[in-house]
Amino acid sequence: MAKLVFGMNQSLDGYVDHTAFATGPTLFRHFIEQAREQVGSVYGRRLYEIMRYWDEDHPEWDAARREFAAAWRNQTKWVVSRSLDSAGPNAKLVGDDLEAAIRGLKAELAGEIQVGGPDLARSLTDLGLIDEYRLYLHPVVLGRGKPFFAGPRPRLRLVATDVMGEDVVRLTYVPACPRAGVGRGDQSL
Image (tube, rainbow, N blue to C red; front, side, top):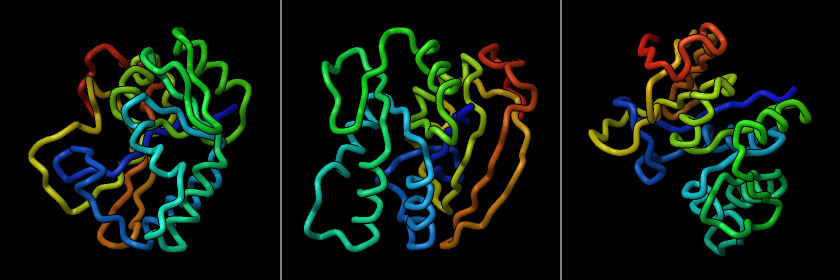
């Protein structure tokens, strides 16, 4: 059975913004290895369109960026969207029944499936489908933006802390009581 993981870079005050964080070489290497090991990724439309940047080579890329692009292109992507008619290479659109589609992926596959985007993560959290949350905390305060948790938080239990180099700390949480309190406004951590 696959494990659904929601992980993103986050500011100290709880916001995600891909343009606000510098990812140093150690953390970027971590993301390359993670992309290689994942079974695939589930994206909402907006984040998928941002990530499509990796579908085409860019002359200014260094070796690490080329490695990440190759790993990203190799994995299957599932895109949750009502407005897209088609998806790019190695990507499939998820139909109207999000819960059935994701439950099916979890049952059919083995390994980790990355969840991309706080809005999609909120929907999957409400359905009790996310198995792990990874917060990559950067020493930045934004004071605005899209929060990592786009809605009521599930009750969580800390299972790991890791220094990821370049002043970034990864906090790994799992639901404290699987499916309990999810989507019911439980605000406790």
